Length: 401
Image (cartoon, helix red, strand yellow):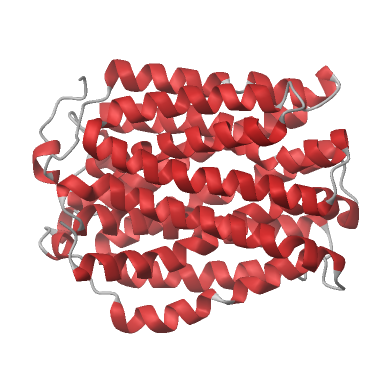
């Protein structure tokens, strides 16, 4: 049962996480206009997005810092940093400037989500852990909808796509509130800090197998999801001639589907099990992406793809926190995300390279759905069932189911 304190914590973390979904959706909404304004081709945009994603690699350092010095201070610092970088993106004038600003924003957006997941995992009861993480993801999807709602208005204004990034100054208000309301987690306060955040400990027997497995699962899934979502508006605009308003409808459909997918993933995972929820979501997400890039039925296809992917990500992110001891939890979650982003970066790079070979991005993006199917197979074959189990008990489970 969730208490008043649990709900307050969820609202606070959710408000910060909302802008993760908002910021990441801007490039999907405005990619054709960003490319035109900054003089970038389709292939250049693909490689640019892959470079930006590398920023998530540095988020691993924030995880180590959070294990060593506490969740609270590092979490608040990430919100300030991604706010400044997002606003700076709105005044960038060249592709290198755009890449640099979004690179920095990606570092701290990724770190904020990582630490929010860790706080939920440590503070929520075992039977609601995935539900809490799913709610955070659902709030991020609301952020995507917010960006989509204001996109047509801002795109038609003197600000254009830049206005979407300038709105990103709002999270500074969240920091002002969180400074007084966000406390340190009880589990972190009880750890032996001399052993906290040691990356080499993730490679010791008993942890290295599950660390490698969860990281590879996330990498395979993100190889499908990241390029599939980032090039959605590009296909709608350039292949089918959709207007900014129609593209907003596409992104709103995706974000609403993601909203329900995160909630469904959390509830099903806590009630019926992690492995069932994750594998079903991955298969649906892959099938939806294939349909999106091979048929004209863009709205229903993206709804299935995003709902399925969100359902699966709820479980993968839950695994990324609960399979590791408290003194390594933020480090593990961050570095699993780091490796996962490698998959997304590889997917974007493959779009850049494959577009030239196959005469367009759509065939490459459809083929990348294979990443989801590989991830589903690995989860069913190798990950343990952790539903409703205490975090200390989970640490003793074997990797195999």
